[in-house]
Image (tube, rainbow, N blue to C red; front, side, top):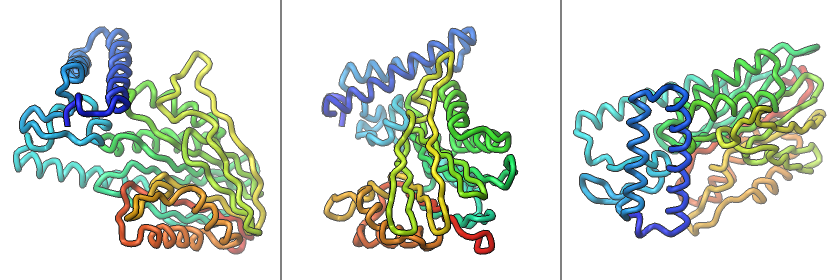
Length: 342
């Protein structure tokens, strides 16, 4: 499929990504006194814009077949598909993907992290060799009792997911260990991400902090709304309080995020998830949806963290009815319990 065959809204999205990338490159090139490597990247962007104007954007320059839309969204300057790779380079790519997965796996926390008064459990299911999902738990010593931070998000652009995840992991862990509030951690992460990545690469992220007294602060940068599940089955959605990281361009005052505060007592939980859950589609092209997830959790009040995650995965599997996941899927549950049960 060439550019002329793409719907107008798809062409507009490609053009917007390329122009945003060009603007960022121009600013960086001016600041760094025209480094040759960035000038080459600018040439790649201009060449892609020319192909878009000429109606050949999205056509492989070697075999003249279609470059996948997802591949173009991940790398809008792509001009060829994998046909150009020799068998040796294809094997090298496979080795690189394996290494990227090992990097991601090493960044993941243990599946069950116990903190006084809390149980946690998560499942992380990549849909391919490199996942765009991010999950982490960091235990710190707070002002008066043990605290822990929890983070769950989704990185755009599979080709750079491993590097962006490593970048976010290092930054957020450092912010957590200094006791930075979740909303301030998101603002700092956004500043770093916006300054060091291109416009088409961003991350949605929930960052929260919980303590031994059941007090939870949550800030949400454009991610799926976490669900608070009370022991009586009542559920509450905590909506996003800011734009995704990398899209909210920092100002002199910095991009701002707000935090919501909730208090959980024994038997209450918080469930975080990526859109691989809600956008999972069955064989009839029907999405699982947020309402089905919320209805399921309403029947699970008081259940431990591991049981909550297991019930969610079982219901998604039943809904797929033999179909396959189309995206990475991660679910994290935090359950408030008596200290001796954690």
